[in-house]
Image 1 (tube, rainbow, N blue to C red):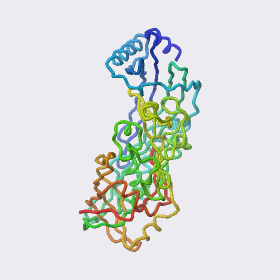
Image 2 (cartoon, helix red, strand yellow; image 1 turned 135 degrees about the vertical axis):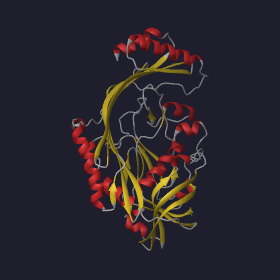
Image 3 (cartoon, rainbow, N blue to C red; image 1 turned 180 degrees about the vertical axis):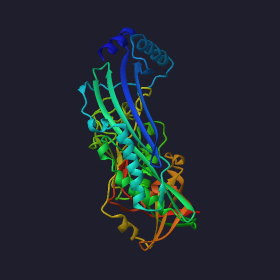
Image 4 (spheres, rainbow, N blue to C red; image 1 turned 135 degrees about the horizontal axis):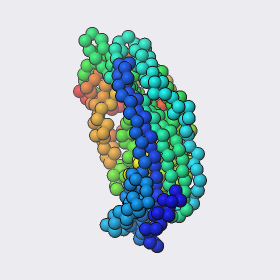
Length: 440
């Protein structure tokens, strides 16, 4: 990093603040289909992003060639972009003078697995899915991805940190068939250690959801209790998560603006974003700008506690940074983002929740999550699942539409499951909602 610093400072004149962010990412992707190897791919990308600030103007550029010539050319491009940028009092750097290596998870054992072992892991996963139910006839695709990441970051205020870490993610699908009908389901898990991915649970959930949708039909339009299975609840949380971010507040694109301290949901609802969650996919002692990470209460027992801020959004909103600056790559500027966002678990089993009401729609799959509106909170989503009556399975349904507003879900929450799971950086237990409009 010493050379990078010298190269940058040789171009910049006095009065400029700067940040250097260098990142190396090695990716290994294994894919199988129907118990056969399908694809193995490896890639590596190294690059440097350079941010310059002067008089509350900001410029940014990046390069994938880490040489003196290319880095200094990158600095010049950043200066050129700065001169075209309007002043913004939020354009400042973190002044935390941390120096050193940040403690991070690195799975030496996981990265040492051979390609053959990884392929066999996926084949075993597909076979296990079949063993849970004879109606599972195959898998369209399964994948196991490994990322090895190294980051070095410094700025002109003395911040200088580095870390190396690993990420693993697994995806699988299960195809069920019976009496001429087919149904498919998908499962996803991610972890910093490959050993923490529960492949057996993935197989069980994929098998359950695929077979549950066999013989599904449409359903009448009515308002009724709805139980979101844990991964559907997590998907819904992720879709609406932008409303919690400082960038949404700055852009006036969140329904929670001005609601700090207000009751926005049931006392059963607590949403947390924890940058220090043990072995969490989004965990690190510092955020992407070097601000110390922490556990943030977003909603506590139904009360909205506040937004998740980067340095920029905190300055713009007159708040303190919350350790929520994230960086998607060296090609991007830091923005406010989630670290490990989750709904706290409750005390009830799935069976308990299915017996609360005479009739309940258990949602196993949601479609169209990209269409939700975090500004208004409105949603209209396709759904499939199972109708239960007095705790007993009545029929499978598909092609139904769930419509309403996320605030209605929060306010009508009457039960929270004890089956909490993290799906990457998002987590939730199953959630029981007293009434939602279910349309055909």
